[in-house]
Image 1 (spheres, one colour):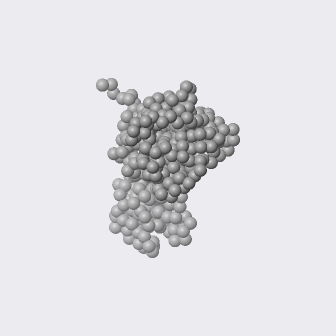
Image 2 (cartoon, one colour):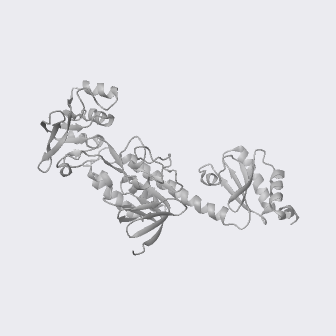
Image 3 (cartoon, rainbow, N blue to C red):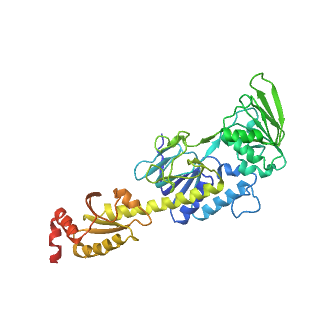
Length: 420
């Protein structure tokens, strides 16, 4: 077997939807060497949206493809590279992350996961002929306005199906709902169920599933099959909305990244996962709203967090790991009075002992990254580090005497510093 080529990057982005594209724009602008890997279509599911009318600042209702093409162009202009191939495996442990494709191993300081997901489909006959912009949709928020005054069919009876169905009644003249259960039984919560049953624009076709989708170039009829007697019920409609679930594209991460029971990636507000240097953004995240605008916001945050992580990691190694001398670290908060006093004292200590120790100041006001790497949670604190490990810490009532005592006990030459 031929050995794979190895390429190094600052950041590897996996997935090319709006979240990944935005991350590419921000990483490129930050002068990080970045590559975005997408297995199918740059732009993701957003490219199938016939009109985007709720993205801030865009008034001409462009197609989703027009918007994502502009995002890609902007990312390229910022220096982000693109590769159309599938990721086969990842190794996200350690400082160097590895992303494997068929021919290449991409090594990176940080990885941003933006693999999104895919709507669960019915699997009925002819379905693939009408997906997305040919009559079958998966997003009422995206496509409701395009169905003003029309008849739409909703498949499903869970919370998403019923709530999205009621939203569609604000635009459509009629919303029919195919429910696989007996009359009056739905999978949604009782409040949504009661509201839907009372909605004059909504009607329900009980004990049915989709048998086939029909039409010429565009969907015109959905044939439903009665589960009790097998009868086929043709439903003429202008569009069909399927709300029977969503499948996150997270399989290759499940043994390394913390996922929800449904397979979404857990992150904090900085898009950080449980793995150091690994971030997730967009529809793959465990979150409440999945829209182009929220994906873009996620991507911006993930990229900025990745940039900060890489900078802190480089500083950590340069200032704390690499020095031959033991390192004395002040971790402080610049806006805290006690920290400010400790900073003045620390500068005096540095003047006396600079020949015997390396001195580092870490302000946690904007980021606790380096402090977190050291496991320090109290500020201000003076920390003596040898070979990357803290050997002693001083907190509370930081004085010159306590610092000198610590230094003299851990380094023989420290007691002679004042004689120079």
